[in-house]
Length: 425
Ligand code: PMP
Image 1: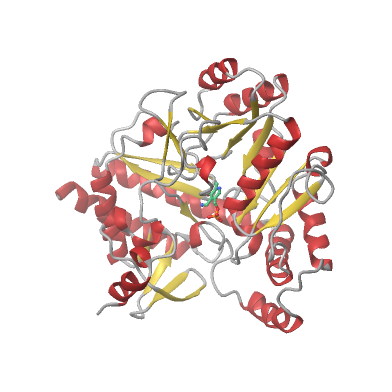
Image 2 (image 1 turned 45 degrees about the vertical axis):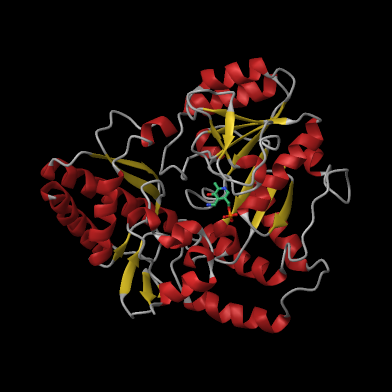
């Protein structure tokens, strides 16, 4: 019995999070044994170059010696007390400054972060509806597992069984990078919209960068209608630059959600915002939110160490940009040389390679046209070359500082061979 067979016997689908089953690319997952630097070594002792980075958190690569040493000390200090600790104050101050906002509450996952931020936005505004965008993912809480019904912006259907239709009736779906869809929805739901939530660079339909005009218009329409603008930066915070990408976009949201990198590889989430909003949270205000392990001192210490490294070493972001630029250029040269139809989308160290004949990629409608068979061929060719690309067309490549130019060059060479293979098959 293979390990995957045994896993499937005891764990639904053999995995604790669906994308790990590699179902979209043939269904043969890699079981990671350990990671070091840019490599993941699997249970067969094969080493793979890691472009998944645990879906974003491992921005410094795996098994960094200085962090391992510190973690050993933190273990000895104790894991969790159910009492406030000094490091929670330190990380709250650090994150408030990094996001240029007032207050922070920590939770245990990105799902909890967005779920709680939305409850708070509703409690603050005394309004019930929220706007989210097709193709953006904000975790798996009921009210956010919604896709738009066929062609309609107002009739929604749950993305998952088990989500009652009355739970999602207050979730309105608009089109990413399409301000007209937002204006229409707000007009139809005048005075009822509490919040607009979005990924400021979309990463969960593959990478789809945002139009600056669109995000500026979201800020304006939110201000005009008393709507809380929430940036879900679970992926983007500290990945694209130190802190929030909002400073680069020139638009400041009312609230930020974060996770992934902030936990340094440990489970974490959190949300931050202006004092007048955040003070509505329990125990100060009427909006309830809690967590037995929230702000776990061990995780806060681990996370803060990573954040401090990122703050003190801006050259990390320069290196990530260099690697990403090399990959983008290399992939584009290879596409030209082989004539395979595909499109590279990139925002700093997040990128995707969409197979298909695209004029532009700006929305979920666009990415839906991708050629999934070719992506599967591509993924498996790269996997055989011991390069781990995301096991779905609709996920992002995440780079880490543990990569180096020779690894990037090897990846570009293998990408060319993969494209040649796709052309012939
Ligand atoms: N928001 C975004 C933008 C995400 O990418 C994710 C997870 N990929 C989440 C929320 C949910 O985070 P978690 O998986 O930690 O619950």
